[in-house]
Length: 234
Image 1 (tube, one colour):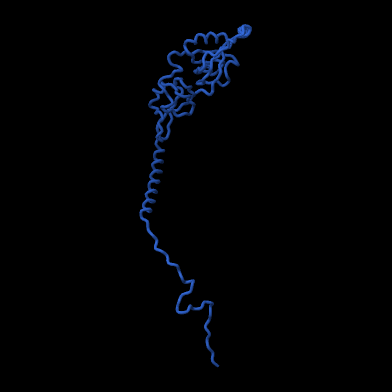
Image 2 (image 1 turned 90 degrees about the horizontal axis):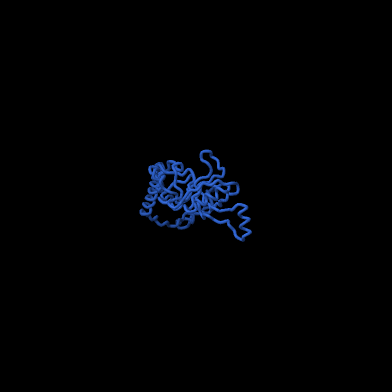
């Protein structure tokens, strides 16, 4: 009895003529093109970014002394010593007024309304002020409730109004005329209340033209002056 060994089939028949099967075939891959210029550019950009970040951190650590406003100063008003304070800030390249020029700041006027917390720049100040310069006068007023707006503060701009007393108003109506009129279209408020007592009490000082200063003072003494705030005027 002849026993022959049968070949074991694993499902993969050998390819005829010694050719490989489809699973062994691979598509040709083109050689990768090297671009040394792009690689060098990428490295350069990385170095530049790292250098810029380093310089920013170093520069942020540099501190300089600047002038900060600590109380409101109205446009056209002279900047008092009490309104400025030294503060240390990062040297970011912004042209803030250095604290070493604080004595000069006290000789200048606010070109715009300066609010507390503002860092002062050269564009915010001026050497001259038409609002408090020659030809102007500061008049003190003692006003009653209803003659001065609530919340009026130093540096605000107001209209000064002549409001005749009841008897004068009655006579004016009988004659067919209205005597109430604007004495000053825009007046700067230089003080509100008594600084020594820290109380308003209707005391207000305003800047008016020198030629109407006596008239405003006379009407104020008779209780015939009222103020209108102009919040849109800075």
